[in-house]
Image: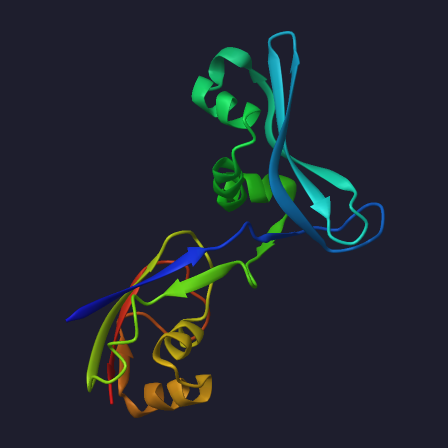
Length: 182
């Protein structure tokens, strides 16, 4: 039987960028937007707050866009300060590259295994699904989901008792499956 595990975000990730006021390296997004119209041109920013001094920085979302070329539902979501839109935009590679930011997902996600009934089986087949593009080490997910230490998971990989079609070293942010034989 295939078990479904889901890696889901619990909050917005920390934005890694240097603060111009205090030289801190981290900001937190609270889902607030600022939209500015200059005649027919529109600018929009996602506001982030420095975790050290509280200074506000703006992450460019739209820059000098013609008002008619912006989807009305996107504009409505910005005006409503939709935190879901903030999460989508933070994961957008174009927005991250334009603003030269990185994301820190530490303590911003959780693993939902659907219960612990799989722990006593001899063979466990698991499909790990990511609800958002959260880079996590598969060894950490397997250790947390199966109640093992990371060293024990590494040992199972080298012994061939833990197999997957993807490489389990490094970080993944896309769905994968694995089989654990005890």
